[in-house]
Amino acid sequence: MRQRILPPAKIGIIGGGQLGQMIALSAIEMGYRVAVLDPDPFCPCACLAQPFIKADYTDVVALAQLVELCDVVTYEFENADSALIDGFNINGKIPQGALALTLSQHRLKEKAFAEFLEIPCPKYWPVLSHKDLFKLNDFPLIIKSCRYGYDGKHQYIIRTKEDLKALKLEFPSEYIAEKLITFEKEISVVAACFKDGISLFEPFENVHVNGILSTSRHPALISPQLQRQALETTEKIAHALDYIGVLAVEYFISSEGLLFNEMAPRPHNSAHGTIEGCTFSQFDLHVLSITGSSLVQTRRSSLTMMINILGQDLPLALKKFSKCDPNETHLHLYGKKEARENRKVGHVTLCAATLNDLQKDINDWRNNS
Ligand code: ADP
Ligand code: MG
Image 1 (cartoon, rainbow, N blue to C red):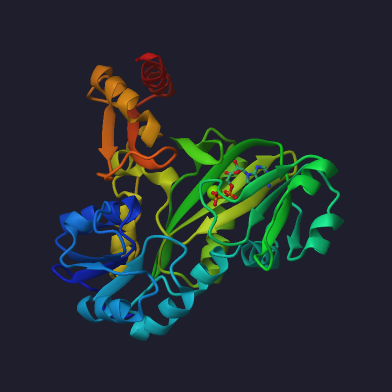
Image 2 (cartoon, rainbow, N blue to C red; image 1 turned 120 degrees about the horizontal axis):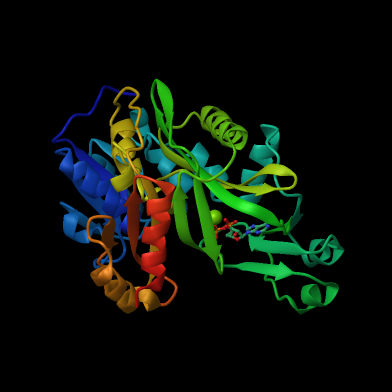
């Protein structure tokens, strides 16, 4: 890692979605300038960028321009081209590097990596051909494309041989079949990896609806033993990746104990509540770590519940917001041009000092309409 990069240096962000936007807001607040590369000139980050580079993520000339213009570069999504990231990571200019990206953008590689570290995962099978597909018999299963899946996209629940026969998969695309876990809870751990140490947020407790994150509670209501195990496991992953920046790991809590689901080498939706709930948010820690700060520990100052707003829910969410206690309800809208169905357009964070108060805020939010 190079020297500390101080403001007003320029941070380049590959990807201009809401994660890029919140990284940019945090960076700008600290006095950095940001440049953004994204194919969509109306993406959430475009208005913050100086300059905004409208280009495809695989446009080598545009990427070279971004790297040249900036003092440090980050990516905000895991489908950035890992070979290009590796190629442009000269002198550690892209501190997150390509290894975590290469592993996390392919579900089979990611699971093999977890197993290599002796971290338990749901039982899984590679599905690389029709032959692999029709060999499967340990139902119920969930079949996922190895690449380009997010928010439950390209995932199929298979309960019977008939479901399997009806499934139309295209090869040579690669898939993974996983045992469908009956989990008690889903949690995530978000780690900020600095050049000299790792800072960990307490686990987040996540509820998904139709494969899309719906709510995240911080901290998760789990036993101290499970909390310790989740933090230690995440630390082990972070160490093995030799990674700088924020990294998130998702787990299931099941009768088999803690099971690794997936990881993301970037800030994570489940930790948006850290903007209000912690002394340094996940975005602050991402900016600080990639600019070469030494270890920063963050403290939780509030209990939080983060509630995602999907396109179709926006009118109702605004109505609820207007009726909730403004002292405890923080609204974030990402400025997306269209409020599309099942796409995240914003979130709300409810803050409280006690579990009872937080529950009251949650009930108010649910009951207001
Ligand atoms: P992504 O978040 O990239 O879309 P995930 O693998 O995290 O993909 O799957 C989305 C959600 O689907 C999970 O958060 C979980 O609710 C459910 N899910 C995924 N894999 C399993 C599994 N093996 N068993 C049970 N539920 C699963
Ligand atoms: Mg997930």
